[in-house]
Image 1 (cartoon, rainbow, N blue to C red):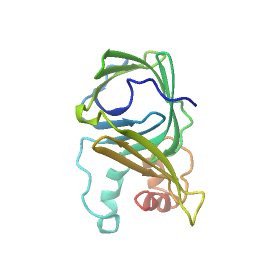
Image 2 (cartoon, helix red, strand yellow):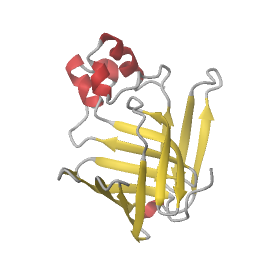
Image 3 (cartoon, rainbow, N blue to C red):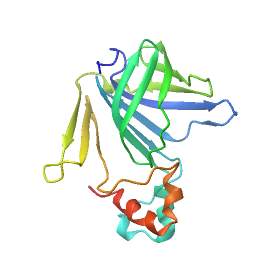
Image 4 (cartoon, rainbow, N blue to C red):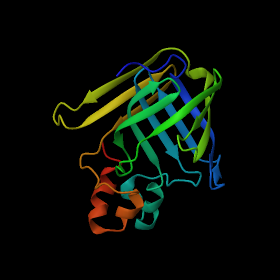
Length: 192
């Protein structure tokens, strides 16, 4: 895969997502760090997450952690179409494609629209993320199947690593959390 177009690298913050249904969200903290090839995306719910180690949380506090999202992989661009090929994901693998039509309103403001026009998103680049931009895939020496990536955009960085035990494919982490077999993968989410 080739490098993305020159205007993409940096850290982008989502200011708004608007769905065709009328639902919109501008409160969730969503960041997308793009290097010339690799990307990582972090989505933090607007409700406060517990600030304790997993072991210190009560069982009733665990579901809040299921609402986070994060994923990383390789970005492919073709004219105004951008596709994010996820290689690791905090949520269970859903099999859905992550692809959108991109339009630069300015060099620092980007509009993403679903190919079927079911949503649009407004992204703004963080000004202090321009400059040196690099991404590197990593592999654990003692467990070659464990991978990670480190991405840098000037003063920002994002590290992502896959789980030691993959989750069963599904639609959302909260669906597996209530099941006894769901507890082990959930506990693995914050490890390594």
